[in-house]
Amino acid sequence: MKDKNDRIWCHLLMCNCESAGENLRQLIDSEIARYTQLSYANPKAVVPWFPKALEDRFNADTGSARARDLRFTTILGSIFFFLTTVTDFAFVPDIGWQGFWLRVMALPLLIVTLTVGPSMKPTGRELLAAATSFAAVVVSAIIPCLSSSPWALLSIITPMFVIVYSNTTLGLRFSEACGLTLLSCTFVTAAAVFKLGAGDSVAWSIGVLTWIAGAFSIVANCWIERSSRLGYLLNTRETMRLSVLAADREKLKTLSDTDALTGLTNRGSFNTRCLEMFLDPSNSGIPAALMMVDVDHFKQFNDYYGHVAGDTCLRTVAQQISSVVRGRNDIVARYGGEEFIIFLLGVTPAQAEVLAERICASVRSLDIPHLNRGDGTEIVTISIGVATAIIESGASLVGLIEAADRALYDAKRNGRDRCEAALPQAA
Picture 1 (cartoon, helix red, strand yellow):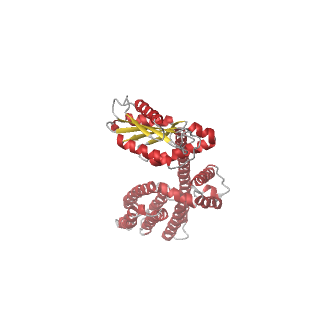
Picture 2 (cartoon, rainbow, N blue to C red):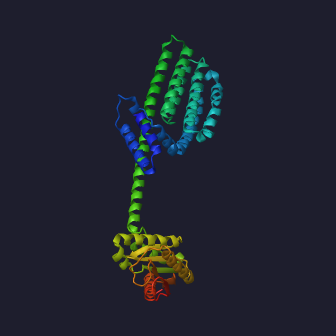
């Protein structure tokens, strides 16, 4: 399973974004299935791990939270570790404050863990935390060996607590927890045997109890980390699902706002966006212009060249108009049939007329043949009606459109392939 998932990730890195996202979803689904459908016959199905690429992503996504939690639990564990000095006066009264100073020997490693650890790479951070825990185990196991008190071995409870604390509350990663438990249980058992002798049954009993505590805490660590990783997988899958839904909604919105033939904004979206600009208080007092654009003698073009050629002509004209109109707040839309509409914000009447002339010239420069016009011109041209107004409480988008439409009618009546300007009556 591990090799298979690693091959999936290698392929994922070579695919495009859409394919990579699909492969990532498949890998996450595979991991969720592995974590929820346990097979105790296969140890790899029980042990918490991820394929390398997913492990890297897991560490990147949870790294800051993990560093924060590790710092807090290390501080908490350090407080409890030094508080066990109180028990020395009952279990090992003959060594006095020596136990405290032995504990202080672990302080430099604790300080490094708290200051440097959070900025280290995940593996280094976990190994440093495990090393700090092992240092606490070593100090706690050495203290009873230095005492001749008959109660000294009772303080062997302390390293057991350190092992359990490290595997559960501190929450070392499973691999580091296994290493810590193996070394710590071996050291504590060796300390008990050193203290009492290899033939003493109490020493070996202490060793057995230590290994039992270590085994229980390792099982707990395994299930805690499995739950954490499964939660991460489920959250990541849900986040990806919501991201896909949001992208689909955005795509549907774009499709619903876009004219299928030309790729321009459609009429409904144009009206909505223009009304928003008219109603926006921050636009009050700003000049605006509206242009109605019509492809001259387009019916004759369709009759002569066919509808497929007519559609191509409209797309070409639409792209040319868009290339000329480039303002951030400008809107170019297909209004219907061979008509286009343009809204310009922050444009004076003089600027609007200059831009309209430029648009006419730009379409004319395409030299699209039109041999069925009947007016002596043999290329596709456009006519434009321009209307301008100041956006204010009395301004009307409808009035601006009607004024531009009247100006367009004048441009057609005066010979086409031209622009005419008019002031809106209702603006």
